[in-house]
Amino acid sequence: MLLYNTLNEPTRANLHTNYVPTDDEWLEINDLLAEPRERLRQLEKNIEELQAERTKLWAHISAQGLELAHGERNLISPQPSIDDDDEQNWR
Image 1: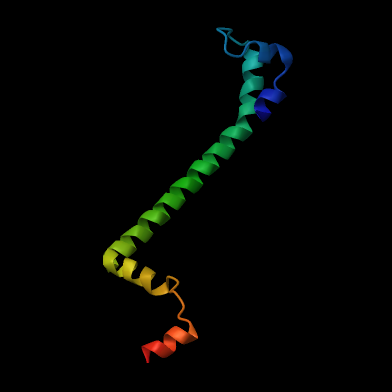
Image 2: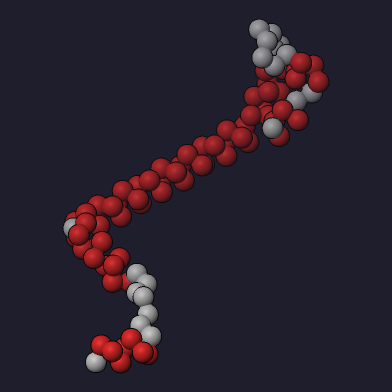
């Protein structure tokens, strides 16, 4: 939306048409797209890095065996507490 707001009125009027921009208009539009393109490139790079990290983590978990991962999760899950009265009944 930011890009749309920065386009001048004649350029905006030509969006979604068969209009072919002049060389000067093409350069202006290309300049406007430079920053968003760079931001997208950086986001794509970050996503690739996160996906690679996730893949490594899953490989590590799989190498230890998925059963172990579930078992460890059960060990740290909240346990129901026992009232003092119930505790005395168990003794």
